[in-house]
Length: 447
Image 1 (cartoon, rainbow, N blue to C red):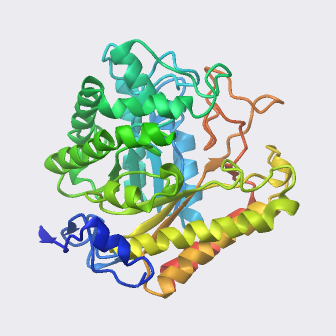
Image 2 (cartoon, rainbow, N blue to C red):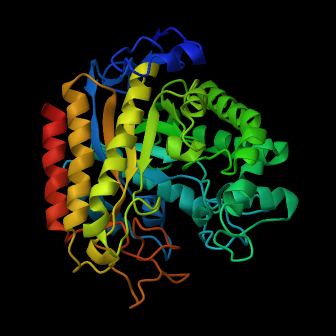
């Protein structure tokens, strides 16, 4: 391998240049050029692969390992159909879940990859192998996230429960927001929980695919290992300040561990951006010091920027906040000299309805806004290198009039089981949205 090391700027130096967003000379992580035609690497603000510029249109589909398993909850034929659909519209990258922890935490998915007694779900691991093999057949790449800040896949709260016997539930009336994320942030300081996480990392990063016979570290279908989905250092200011040293240590140690096991692939954090730090850009910059690229997640409804029942009346103000959020992260990535991916972005159907028959006029506007920003960055030589919409529902349909998932059901959607099925995900019948994705894929690849 040829390794390119970029200069490391101090935090004060790096952040002082935000107004001069075009300067890309500062980088806190190594840039690695992999052997031609194999691995995705970074060169300054670009992804490269096989000697050329690598940029992509992507999707989120957390459930692919479940479909790939040879069990009652698996459906390998559907897995292949969904990947064929995504490929046909120009999606070249999929972000999927590769770690889920079973526990009493409300909404933690079952089955998961691991249980409290250390039992690994071999069928689900094989399902991940199948998903990776199918992605590789199609020339697609994957981002695999290893745990979750939130409860729906068990995540950090479950790992804390395994070690302490205590947990909180998200949206518990007795413990209102932000009790859950504040409590979950104790994970970073719990050495037993972190060490057990490291054991799971060693297991997966060191795994050999049982379908292809290729070690994960040698698989060109893997773009990046991602530490977690939306890892936050708590929410309350006092909690955040107390936990930051442990948060940074967990990020740096996790990244170093992965690189020691796999020198070929990128390491990502999976952070939402400044929404996770109460607007503090310096925390985001420090968190990515040893991370290969930045991510931004954009959720106008969840963050209260729009009203799902009055999208027409709240769109303009919400759109302005979205543009500001995008600009802020483009400038930060440019200052740090690293690629940026709009890794999650979601918007409800009109009227915040869930049925596939509901229209998507405002979702279409939102997608166009995100894609236009990515295309403008690309045209200007900026840092945006990828987009992953949330999420792909494909052929799945809600099984009940209340659009709620029941334990034991297998119609997995991009909307996780704890959310209304059809809230943010795109169905295979969403022709207007699909057309926008397809057009962006063509433009982003050639602009």
